[in-house]
Length: 207
Image (tube, rainbow, N blue to C red; front, top):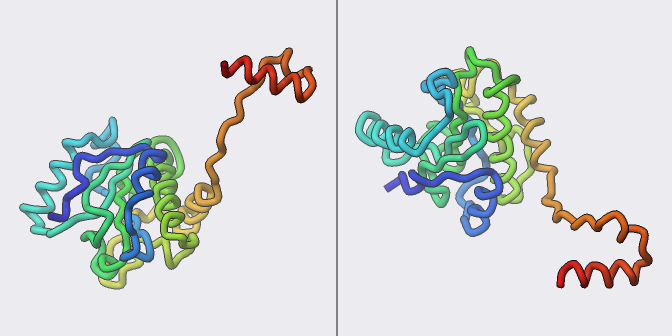
């Protein structure tokens, strides 16, 4: 147990849909990590499911952890690891009530503000925003934690090149977004019709 989500992969919209039926009542924050190893250079194509299975084996047999971080992110996808219904293992002081997310890369040396690094952090920020919206929590330094905020660690995680202010700003840029239902664009000649004629034209278009 503790590795229930291995094999699950979402884009951000799919992840939001998945969360709709998940009870996150046990958590009150999200803790953000970087993987450090592997780095972006070591995973030039991002994650694949086999990588998650390899990590599961490492956590189980080498570290002997009963669970692991909940999610792993790369340029455009979110990979599951531990169940979001309960605590994982990722930061000693925060495990009890914080969801752990691992962003691909080593941001002690790799750039989080350009290229693949920036894309990974955008995926991570949108994931955090989605989780906090689900929990009806604001975006601030209490709800968005870094591993290095843990007083029981001396790690720089999620990388000394990543500042809390920058990341919170990035999360806020996604948190404020609301889904917009696209409105079908009428053909140009129809735009010139009266409202009643437009309704008749739409009925004709829709059959």
